[in-house]
Image (cartoon, rainbow, N blue to C red; front, side, top):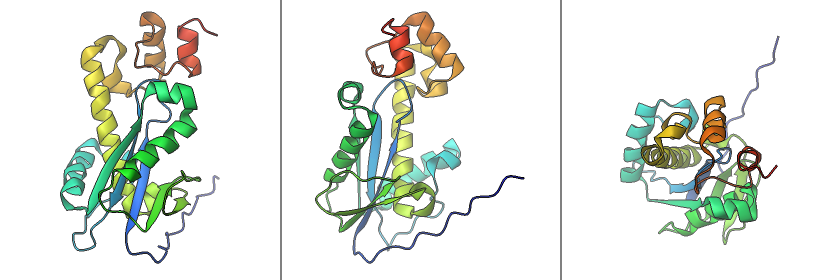
Length: 203
């Protein structure tokens, strides 16, 4: 019988203003990696924050608008496919996180990053494993980032309906790989990713 994994509650460090940062889009073959940074307002709590992947699309959209209305500051960052190809996905993600934090109009005292590593920032930062489920600020950031990127994939689907982007959001599903092999790669694809290189005959 498989053991259940217990995720310990996160104990917040002492800090006045905390920003949460998360990313969406490290795994897809196409499009930008999108990040968000959020500073919540203690006077305006948001009920229902959770890891964006565990929420229904309807709930995500509802929370997306509420987050933008209620938080003290929010910002989006991104790294484009060309930057991903030049830097690799890890470094491009760190760059996108730096851009999200830099876009906040209030400078946080501490930045909590989802995952196990932090980008270089001009203030204190801490990585939180499974932070999108444990830290409200990171949950809010994950929702902003996911809704933003999903919308971009829906827009890309209107331009290139033959690929099914609205369905798979750019992730390497069997359907996506089939369409990529059939139609080739558009300029929005990440050419450093192995399935795209194979489709272009580079491997």
